[in-house]
Length: 552
Image (cartoon, rainbow, N blue to C red):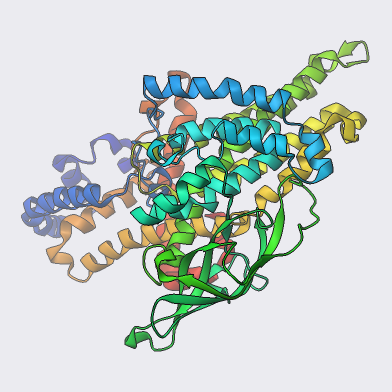
């Protein structure tokens, strides 16, 4: 109680002296005082070192109980005035195209896109949005791409997948990691839509476990080409693609790893001998996009078609997915906007019990909750895209969280929209059942939400573990590291008496939000302590404690 009453003054030496004297640790205090000067220097050095090594990622630092606000407060804006004007020139034509040319219901019924739709997207430059202008593309930033992706998500998720599978993941490997020759050879024709791209990772025996792929590529004796064998499953654009980014196991030539195989990324053309694809799959939703198996039978792939170096494939595969996930949140934003518009219009026109549906609190509550979920998803999508445009390197956790939340929020919004429509929403003519069918896949592909939850937990705990290791190393020689230990002790003491150890969220919030902001600050601190305690308890075995990981 005394410590709580003096909480504001605990940092003062006089108060610390008074507390320790009252509880009988005067001898300890004299010893500590003799070390105090050195300890203060160590605390300052430790804090400075921590600040220098702390990544800017907002989500990653939550696992260490830290509020690092730079990428969140104030809300990031990356578009220049010229960028906004460029975007403005693209939004209206794309919206008009979806409203007047594209027919989502017809695409769903025919299970393909018409030539008119494909030609229209090509003319607008829709297949090369982020390819640089000097290579034939529009050269859009991530924020601009997200805005156009939002429009696609509002009107037709099937067409959105065709475009996304092509550029968000299909040729993204060439864009991010291709050398000058590879980019000049492929990107201009991919930008024009002359060539369509696909991303080939999933196999019959490997879904979420990408490391277990069996597709093999063996280097020829003259080291001029690889012979590729195997198959890929459920490939978006698989039946129509001309260029594939293919991931395959290649034998390692490192003597220290003997026969261990690594994953390598290849650019494979459909016109290479031995490349074929199966018939389009019959699917629940996104029927306008073609999904098919792709087969490789003794395909000779020139060594010039390797992305980066042999063995870099897994890193490339994961970074492509990480880089593209923000686009999914943007598409879900558009979908939710369309659904809320439908629900609001119906609720304002449908009369029951002497009043329109929107006059009843239950319906108002549903629409308010739908708007909240939209607001969160939209905020995350544009926060991530803006930070990427500003050069952020640590955004994989935020991207994963936005994909998880956005896909589940959109499903909930679709469900509530149907509920507001009642029996009418269950009928095909309302167009809602198609949207719900389309939405179901978003919780599965590009990393299932279950696996991404584990990814978020493990990546966050890995970051927290590095912080904990520094403390553990200091504990091995406590007298020489009093500053480090004392700094941690301060945090533990603050937590014990109910004070937050993280920087205050309230400094960034409107005065009306002070109370929830203070609560947020407290739980950030407690979350960091909880992560640290469980890591100390389970150490590396934490990976086998899935219930704890799910909670994280």
